[in-house]
Image (cartoon, rainbow over all chains, first blue to last red; front, side):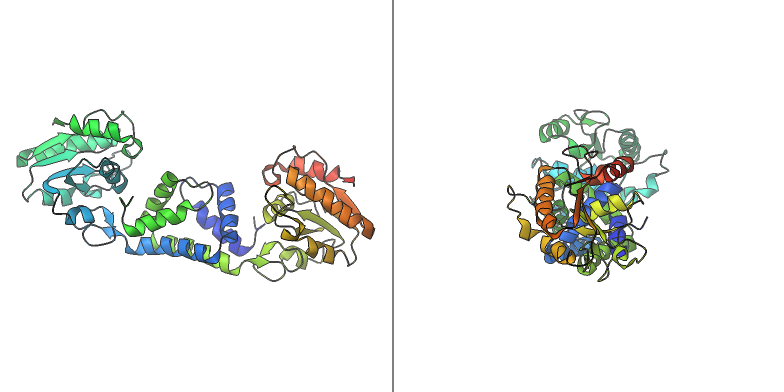
Length: 198
Length: 198
């Protein structure tokens, strides 16, 4: 329905592709953008394309970052022998915010899900196994406590155990079915302290 | 808090400036954008800046459009002697969707609001009065039935009456306090049919 002009329609359609943005919200956002100062609009547009073009995976831990190596992997004061495995960069940030974890991370970018057809090769598992050939003392599995997260944790522990490296899982202080990034920091810390060997 | 990389932070901050987008939603959108195909991201970024740079006011009715004159004002099959006054382009589209109004529009881009310090000079009122020097039979005031919309309607009718042009107000089929763009088409039509002379 072309009730709006072509440019406005294109903007509304592009915004509707974002998750959680329906057509009414997209229209509201579009008209807000049309009334924003030009430099704010340019900043938004360039932030979008520049982030997409410049953000890449850290070559060690695969978190999303601006450089080849992320600040955490670069930080020599952290314990590089302890690796916490998380599903995505937002989960990494959730643990970073507790300020108490001194090891490094490995970001899988997903979890094994037979339902969605996501297998071990579709997440950064091979890359983790390669890192484990170095001098590693412990792998803490901090995938979500969802079905997919648990499946991934079991799969990972079976894979790592033969290497002799200690494998732990964050405690079930994390509510079952919950999503790591939305949990309060105290609960996250309790889950870290109560981790058990798999 | 710089838990994310600079580029991701800039993207999250830019998205947070949009209405109704809090910091959690902005993060979710940002990570979605980072995972979108590059050409979709480019389309979104260019739709944003191109709409902002190219959309302008129609020089007759002041709706937002791509050309100097909007398709409705260009359409010679419409009755250019009947002008419906609305607060914004979304309200215009709400009436266009009924498919039954054959006149043209005038978009005020706001309503008089002493509370917010918006006076008659801050909306496209002068421009409307200029149009009324032409051959006009009727002005239908279709501002929202909010306090500001009603204030604007009363102000407008007092301004137009001395010119001898018929002034009408859409009927109160529109729920008091409601916002035109969210109302169903049947109610909008009833309000149009039941309009009364001011």
